[in-house]
Image 1 (cartoon, rainbow, N blue to C red):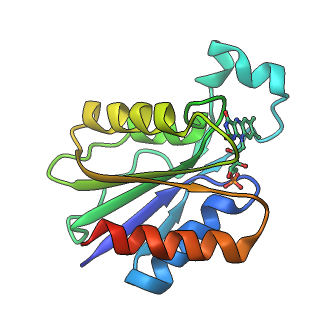
Image 2 (image 1 turned 45 degrees about the horizontal axis):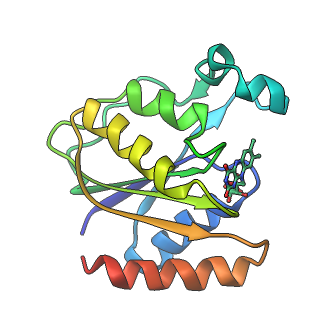
Length: 155
Ligand SMILES: Cc1cc2nc3c(=O)[nH]c(=O)nc-3n(C[C@H](O)[C@H](O)[C@H](O)COP(=O)(O)O)c2cc1C
């Protein structure tokens, strides 16, 4: 399966999931960088600032080479990160099967997955699966949870 993982990660958990997808499925990776990284918590809560990610890369067309696209984000306030939301809005996923995933600590992951799926559908992607990885600071646990999630995807 020719697949690409597009993800944003600030503290590394979502990157660990992307790296595990690479080692298990030979998935390529594309990390989104938010050029405005130092938002305060209160700034992140303001709708105007939530939508103001300045991201790299921008204006991407997903190569027809890829059959499946994974899209991953940390859960922020029960939703998605500004960078991944902006990237999805700027991209056309026409004809792509998409698997969305998130990483989280305690709660809000279901709403976050719904939000992620909604954004992808609006950009013409076809959602085929979704999964969440709970992270408690232990990288080995994240890798093990991701391997289990990959098995359950049954792809
Ligand atoms: C601004 C902010 C908001 C967050 N909101 C939530 C949340 O609503 N629910 C939750 O379970 N975890 C929340 N978290 C924790 C992250 O989702 C979790 O640590 C995630 O795995 C971080 O991903 P990363 O290491 O790839 O950046 C939040 C973290 C930050 C920095």
